[in-house]
Amino acid sequence: MAIDDLLDEHEQSERVRTWLRKNGAGIIGGVVLGIGAIAGWQWWQKEQVGKLADANVRYEAVARSLQSKNLDEAAKEVAALGGGKAGIYADLASLELAKAQVEAGKSEDAIKTLRALKVEGEFKTLIDQRIARLLIETGKPQEAATLLGAADDSSGLEIRGDALIAQGKRDEARELYTQALAKLDVAAPQRRLLETKLMDAGGTVADPAAEKN
Image (cartoon, rainbow, N blue to C red; front, side):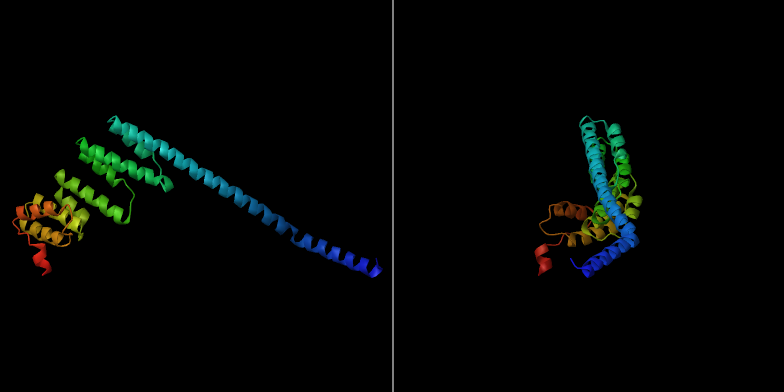
């Protein structure tokens, strides 16, 4: 091997060593951070799986308590359910508990259970409507009307009409029932009940076919 080649190799190795001295710590740090990130991700995944498993166990406990009609114990288990991904178990358990409470004649407890739900969007609308119905049943029609505000979907209008009927305001209720009926599909199963409510309020049910013509 020529002397020039040895010098070139020596020079190259010196350059490599110099570069490693300057950048080696950064490289090692990056590797350590990478390993740490992977370990952290694996730990986080295990934590999530653990939380879901725990939530599932509590949900099963709620189901057993409801089957045995132990509503107080079921309520404790529902309260113990956490949020995050486990929230779906809490929501389902709360809905089942509220249903059982209503069936047991504990509408006030059912209202509290439903109000504790942290929901948004269409699900919140449905929960608010269910709460409003229970408020009317427990003699709080004005509170039900306030909760629904100016809801203008078919179900919202119907419940607002029910609240007005409970307050003796038949004329205003009749108007809301008419609006609700106009927004309801002709084949909807709840149409017959809504028509009955409208007629009881002194209104007339128009022929859907005539309305189209």
